Image: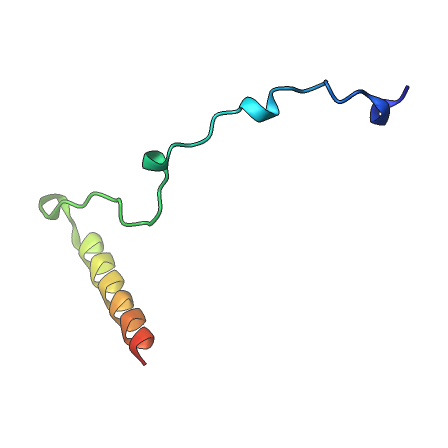
Length: 63
């Protein structure tokens, strides 16, 4: 018989693969640690751009 005519017992591992626990799933991008004492000028600029972008998004949602 060919490959398509097997009895279906070839791979019984599919049903027992572990799932990712909910506490390990990352739901948003806000899990990055930030320390102001180690920030340089580029970090502060990036933080200001991110805050400005968040304000624009919040402003567009309220309209």
